Image (cartoon, rainbow, N blue to C red; front, side):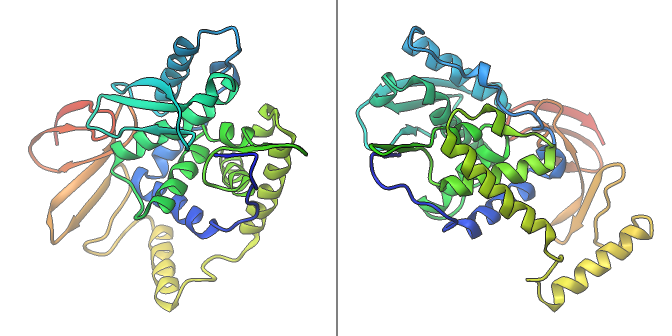
Length: 300
């Protein structure tokens, strides 16, 4: 959290941001990402000075838990003097303790932004998804929050004038704008209508320009010979009706995988949170979703 100090601009973490988006798709699947078409609504995290501080913080925390589809997670929010904006204790759950900087006692409209980042930590912890190193892991968290519909609050918390500046999160304003633009191009949702910060609107416009340039680049320009050959093979098989070579994968109606590490398995989305669950094809199975802890029993 920058408060009165210089705010970094530009795209110094762009490569890590792109890796984070790729990792999110690999861990969740395209179908699961598509279940986040609606961002957190401003009215659901609105916080005025007349609201009770602790009750209001708990209300916003519950909204973030609902948005990330963590039905059995319970957040306990407290305040204390600290250097960083916030901190969460990533225990086994279902209770998670979140500490917010004391400055949020008087800057209440940014509590939603701080909790968007901290609950994203809980979400990634449940998924078992992380990057090595604190810096890269925090970039992954910011990118996840923005791409799944809660991180627009982090960009809107960026405010700057001649006397002071404030920014939450590890991404630069332009990088937040880039991730939000990628989300906007995917879902057709424009978050700029919710911004209260003029600087956030400017950063989002710059991020959108870069995101649109990404879409104008020819595919596989950075891939090697083997990657281009693999892409051409997979595309040819898809055009042939989905036939795949032995040991490959097909999507209709489920996703089947087989390799030398075990028997043929089928994956399907969890009915509660849509996270994909993999079970053996044959026999009766009892599976537990690693994200929302829903227990499923079925015959395969």
